[in-house]
Length: 217
Ligand code: SAH
Image (cartoon, rainbow, N blue to C red; front, side, top):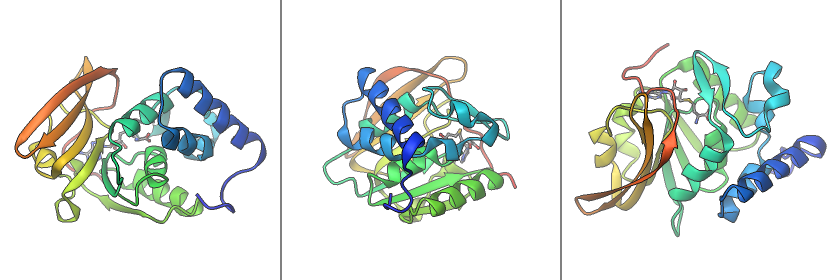
């Protein structure tokens, strides 16, 4: 985030306090903690909820969707980091908060969202924060974004019943995907690809909105 867009005063302190709280909860990546500390989360929530923006909780963002809990954003991000952090595919842009964290760490972010109004708002927020290394697409993230891949990192922020095969195909050799899977009882899975072998590791129980097929205007 550029100097001109980083916020002084209260929100910067709030970001720092939130990052310290996440560190105490077990987040270890300095890159992730710095990105959280620098990101003005109050700009990613409805104005009426701005006073809760730096709480470690998910919040409604309209259209029946939510901005994810900061701890989960941080945890998912640190699990897909590698040595180069070249490019990442995100499915479920939502508010764009997770996107803003990724954009501070990865060279290039590709993000797919099925609800156009959310995508527009997210796009405006990122532009206002001078985060220009993000490409967005309105569409069904179930199918990924094939012609920009394969990706060394994929992050899915809505829960399917099962891992979409197209996302597995778009995962590069040695790449890592983090994805919540399930309906009532969802588990965060970390999938690592080695040639055509997909190793799956169960991380923790989570609660995401469902990954819905198709797109919406
Ligand atoms: N990371 C976001 C989470 C938003 S909630 C944030 O912190 O703000 C999940 C998002 O996934 C919603 O915006 C929802 O519209 C989107 N979504 C659900 N199914 C989708 C699909 N098939 N393709 C793309 N986006 C989808």
